[in-house]
Image 1 (cartoon, rainbow, N blue to C red):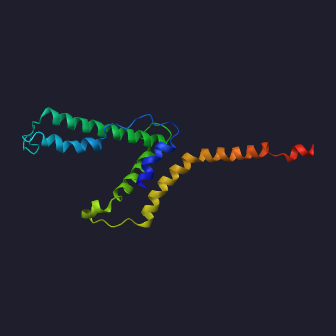
Image 2: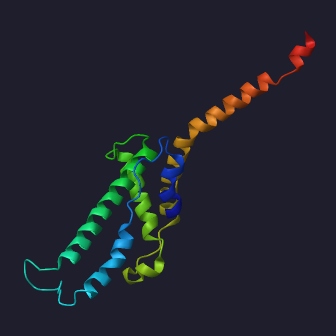
Image 3: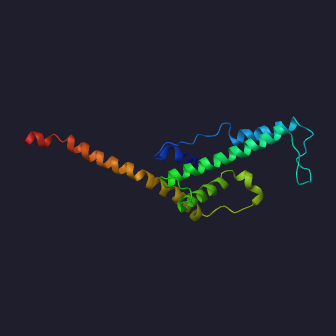
Length: 168
């Protein structure tokens, strides 16, 4: 479900997604941080003081990571708004509902990562409720397509009806 929800904006939004993915991604930048710190062994991020001095390269790496993560979050929210509402208003209540369902599935994606929380599996009712949020969005966003498909089939049936011409 998480993968489905993550990719629906790209395939179901009426407008092409105009916000490109940041490159490099925040995940790539995050993976670079240990190397940056290893290159500066004197940097101690665990100092117990209000201001911790870090080398410029490390500070720039942290700044790039934060900026990219912020851009990714904004992009994801805009894409969700385009999918759920067909508009760009990311404050619509339906977006909150979609986000809650996404986070629900995200939290249950990797059970091995959450074993220390020792939480109980969700009830079938809870799972079905979250699936219904996704189904509702897909149904609303695809309704016009299927209405047009039925209208087109009716139109083609009328156009291709040769029986009326033979009777004249």
